[in-house]
View 1 (cartoon, helix red, strand yellow):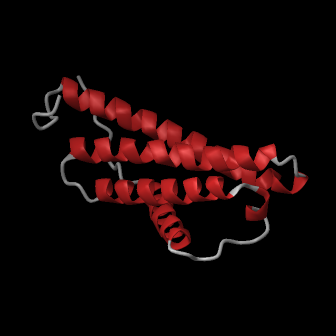
View 2 (cartoon, rainbow, N blue to C red):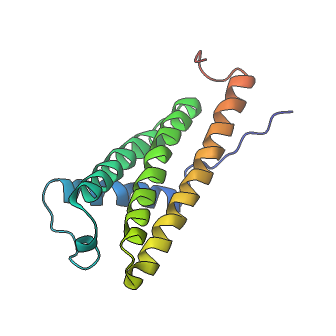
View 3 (tube, helix red, strand yellow):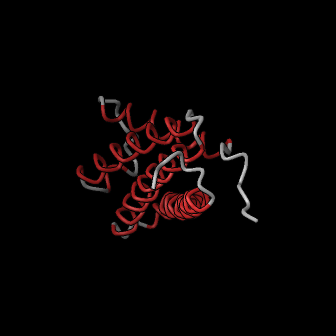
Length: 140
């Protein structure tokens, strides 16, 4: 008997997706980032981080709005790729500076990446399950 996970719109996940879209968008259009830690990493890291946050946040929020569970999970999985990549890139860039002051920020980013990877795995399993029970809406 297949088990479907209900309540896929977890409030903390939606919050992080909205936060990602807002912060990534604000920085991409010219908002000034905080000057403390951002000064330690190259500009390309910042721009990669901003654009990954923006794209994954928007894709994830579009997925939240989907009524079709299969489409919602596919979009959520796509968003989780960016939600893993953005904080992983930024956290590793912070750690590479060798500065002791980046410890908390780097740990936060790496934990965020791990949580997003776990949620991506859950979404992937949900997609597989929907395909197995034939509720993928004709998608294979």
